[in-house]
Image 1: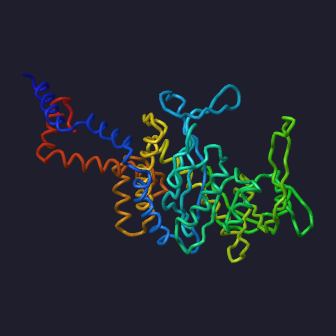
Image 2: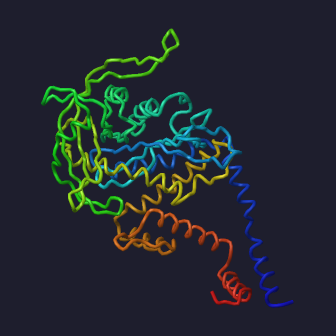
Image 3: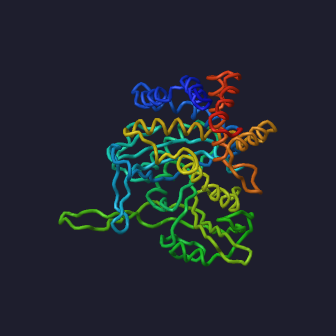
Length: 422
């Protein structure tokens, strides 16, 4: 028998200890086991969430909410897929991920998911409500979620709900105001506000043009460019009627207007300005936080933190767990797996947010294990920490399976097999 054959046979004997199919089968059984409840899987996240809020938040908890399409157009065997038309002949095929995460008001760092929903064509699988109406809109469901979060968190800190432009709905604003919920919402140019200083109703974009740059907040990196945040504000009221298209008795589509109570609010214009004084981005915001102790600069900074929920989606998708490549056919099994990996995201955030010397050493170790290249001005990235943590756990598994002598023997056999020292 040649040295190469002996090395190959030796490797096979060592690797017989590993049973990858049995591991895959065990994972399948776990994810499809009806005794594995959503509530039970979410309990460790809830523990980290509530302790993290008390540790990392000052007076406010920032609740960032957003929606993300999960693309499964190549996974035709998946059940309950949603199909939506796009521009042209293209289609969105997949599920709808609906999420709220808690973010620190002091540092802007994410703490943990508060809610995850997975909407399919037949059901909404959720960590907070088993009976969400499948026909409810994004904002109708979110309004219910906001009320639930208030009772669930059991904290004396004030919760501020921060949502992107889809939230520019007077019905949504009134729903949140009625439940005494605080909001900071991005709004659109064409919606109207009442501007008491001039006693006029005015489009939000036109009102923004009336306000100058205002106060300088901070310098940041935005799309690989150094910019400065400026903010200005004014007092406004939301008085406009709620509008909705209905089908009348004649079967025709008709616009229905519903008046409602006026909401006293602050209109915030946040601008990102480059070194040549060009405005590279402008965000129009509205909030019912009328207490001026919370400065406009603080509100602008809080909205800037909103992108942290995008980093959560990125960890789940392309920069971490490749969620859109998962093979689970049953949406409930996929949702169980989503909750499990969300806990991994929480652990990465805990490592990232810890300011101790021990945590810094752990971060350096995990970045080294990850093999990722990090920009010179950054100590780490969350995807690098996640990759390093995965490598470390795999190393620990290997050390449980094989003795030190077996690992050295493995190295020797690999060298014999490939003819190159490793």
